[in-house]
Image 1 (tube, rainbow, N blue to C red):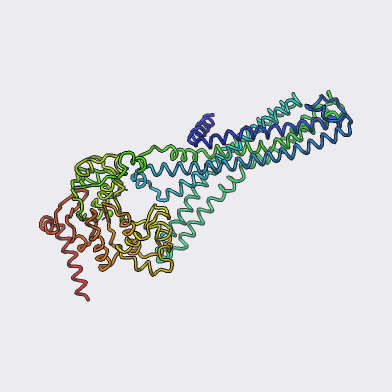
Image 2 (cartoon, protein in one colour):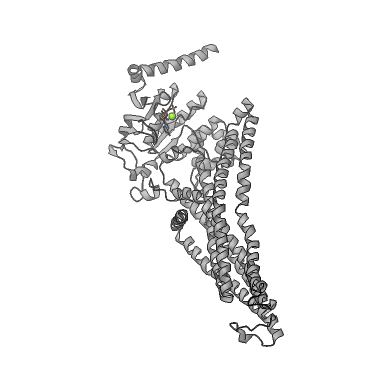
Length: 613
Ligand SMILES: Nc1ncnc2c1ncn2[C@@H]1O[C@H](COP(=O)(O)OP(=O)(O)OP(=O)(O)O)[C@@H](O)[C@H]1O
Ligand SMILES: [Mg+2]
């Protein structure tokens, strides 16, 4: 009982989350189901009347019966013709209802996907980096797909068929009173009992099936992702065996999950027929009130047709009910996403406050900034104080894991401080102003992500095709030292680069990412190890190009290479989440032993490699 009310509450929450238009569409299905029910009632009334006439029993007049000729032969033929016509109409109505249900299911799927996508965009960056499953988007889409096919569609079918069943019941009740009550009560009892027996098994099977299917998908995905390792370690059979083993474990859950919802369906029909004939023949066999077999013919015929009419919607209702109840965990997961509270405002909303965006005129500053990642225990950044003069080039150096990328993300407001502030020209930047600040920032992250499309759309990220300025795209590619390579490609800017640029080398991908950042002509550019995959000469060329735009733009570079650091106006050395030392190259050499060691180590390795030649 509790689980039923829980399911209803969840469905109501889902309904409330839908846009008005879809809600109205749903209500439109109700009259359509009523028409379906009425058509079935008419069919039943006609069949009952037809057999009463055939058996020569007295029969009360039908509505509109004055339209039917009184001649018995013509009367029978007229009723048969109307009966045939009504069957056709009922079939057409059924098809219309089904088409509308399928259409609404898809509309709701689009609605839910849209809500989920919008909600995800309204989450802050922390939300994404704290997800343990990096294939989060696939999981969401699958979940919504399951909700639409295992819950929404069955729910629509349930409402439709319940209305139809009610009408047929009313018709049977009005035609055959006492016997119909026995029949209805027994049928309901049968459904309830079967439902109670079968549902837990279905739920159990589905839960295990989903779990095991997830595992097999992960095995396949991960092994494909790490294909070089598979080749080098000859671990093909390791993965195929693992895949096979789990797939085999899934088998019983798959067939049980497929079969069990059909079990009641399969036994409902013989049960109904047995019931009808038992009730119908009972008085005849016991020799009670009806000795004349002909007298029970109308009853048997009406009920046989009723059973025929009743079975499909009852089966649908029952299967839908089971599907809905076993889909509750999916619905809960989808609702978590659909009702996700908003964590950031978008540029459109913030336009109200700063239509031009926020630009720094003098300085960008982090003041007493502390930061802790969600789910981590300790502060990752501790009392960071740094100032970046507008137009300068600043480098972040330091050991791996010392907090350089995290600090870069703070400057870009991808992450917000646990305490302390980002100040633009000495004024704290509040959450409302974040999109306005970000509109002037560009970023080349440490791990690059490219779109599975052509070069043009990768450079002009998020710009619709008609609005892309191809000259600016070429300028950006030129600056990133990749224009020659692209102009030599047969399809030029329209070359598809594959998923995350698999068709490109590491350095080419990096240069595309740099070109993407340059295309935006931002005032503040952050390059996080953006040139690490480039050879010395290409890197020097990229840096030279950046030098040219550098005067229009403030640049923060996270780098290890001496040559990159050397030309910076100011350097911050990070150590374990704090700024250990800062100054220009010369000052830092004097101040920091670790920086000195870093510089010496690189000089030595460069000298060694030159000596070796
Ligand atoms: N999503 C995350 N959740 C929890 N901790 C994180 C997360 N990302 C990074 N960290 C931790 O924060 C610390 C600083 O990481 P950060 O990426 O800023 O280092 P980094 O200086 O850029 O290192 P590298 O030179 O290797 O890129 C590390 O100790 C890391 O373990
Ligand atoms: Mg980093």
